[in-house]
Amino acid sequence: MNNYYTRYRHLAIEGAKPPPTPGQVAAIEALLEAPLPPAFLAFLQVANGACCDYACDVPDGEGGVETMGFNTFFSADDGDFCDETLVGEIRAARQHLAMPEKILPFARDGGNSMLFLDLTDDGGGRVLAYVEELPGWTGKRAHGYIVLAPSFDAWLDSLYIDRDTVLDELEHSVSAPSHLEAMAQWLDIGMPAWRRDAGLAALFALKQVELYASEQD
Image (cartoon, rainbow, N blue to C red; front, side, top):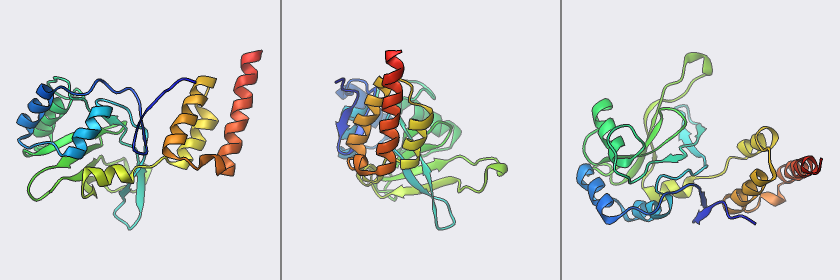
């Protein structure tokens, strides 16, 4: 069986670059004007520029939450501007969002919503989301800067696999046995009880029969 992911705690990490060099870390910290927290450095060793397909709950401003995925993590590579490198995104945030020193953009969703580590004295290492406003016809959504967790570690702990997303992907996106095998590994890491979920297990088994039958034709 192929190994599609690197495991970090309860997270399946995909497509990571090699760990950052000491020089790259020093360049990030010099531009940031703050040391990177140990928890973030540890994550960066295994998830440098990686994809991490997990959801988090973002307060919607009305007492509820919106499920969002900030799955593209920036890399420690040398960079310039808006290039999904940590140093490039620091520069872009300072120019376009008037971000002060000691604020680190580190991940993005599929659009312009982003995550930041607030390493200022007042922020104390909390994780902030900048949530882009959606058009009115899509329904209400809290937007702007929203506190998600008091620390990077706490934010990692809050990540989860969204069941509805899994069901949708099984029904509409999985198109090859290798994709199904990768999904099983992802679920085994991030949702270890999924095989006892009757709905998930039944749809997975149905998709498995369909895909392997089509390979025999």
